Image (tube, rainbow, N blue to C red; front, top):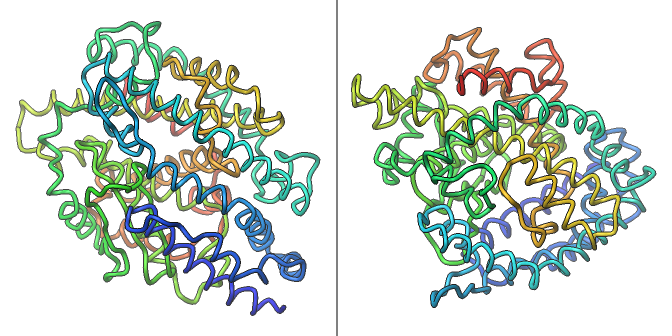
Length: 492
């Protein structure tokens, strides 16, 4: 096998996997065929392919070659999980709730007793139906990564393959948790007292969706206006949100559709899907803008870019662009200009202030949650995947103040330390946003020069890792400092 063979076959594999991910995740196909796809590309999982990737000297190609071996070995587990999730039904207080709608129901349920019962049923069903499957999946992944990726253990092997210093990032996340504890506790206490009538000691995981729902602002973010507003705002930046039709939107409610929005690149840059299952309110707007950042990034990549820059590399970068877009919906000026709140004159100023406060608390919750997740996952992957439930509940509860359930200790884990990519994306996004404000003013989100600047960065795909991109654009290393500065300003 030559390097050209590897790249050509790799491109075809990603197209097939991307289309299958879209069809199954969007609820358009009930029987996933990932195993069949991997079987058609067995040559990419051969020792010859691995050696070609290693000999190329291109680090993302080697990481990808190992990931392919993982993907093929865990495909059966992924398929079984998808089918189980699509078929599982929760029975609570005489009602039947599809498992995949549980998150949406929890987010929209003001009845606390109902939320707690539903979340208990969700966790129990997941533990019974998924935990053994997830355990086998992670054991298989660890086995493959250690066999072909090198490193003293799974954590070290992933760090070596990805180029991400997980220990240093974990240390930075620990400092973030310590440095924002007082700010978070004070802000969260104010929010849940007003929103739920509860103290910090009373909070449970079932409260999270409703606590941060911000439903009294729903009228300012009508579902029917979502796509049209995205097109309008991107046009203000001199950008086409569809990238000349290469980005296709799927925002319909559909049974079997995953509750977690996603972007599915099928042919980069020519065919990219943005999939959202609506839940209501501002959250839909923020989620849509997040996936729009991904979609426009993939669709903007230059066709002349090599395979490893268009498809592979540090996903902290695409997550950084996604966050750059979704954080627009947390900007005071953006809300005043693009939401219905902006039509209320002086009376709306207080509403915008209240909304921004709620959004900032939710943002800090998510940031602290992922900081704790990284620390937990490092411990989990160095353990035996059997007895980590108490540690999971302890770390996530301490970080968020919501009492998490031990039963979720395997369900709430993304493969390959994706939590690290999110944390680096937070850092990258805040640094890029500071640079855009400095160069194009606070309302850069409606400046065509800023649009051209960002699109030029997107057109590079993932040629740079997040740390190299931050250094190139801002002259500094990745840091949580600008993330925290923004949150302090919003919560002051």
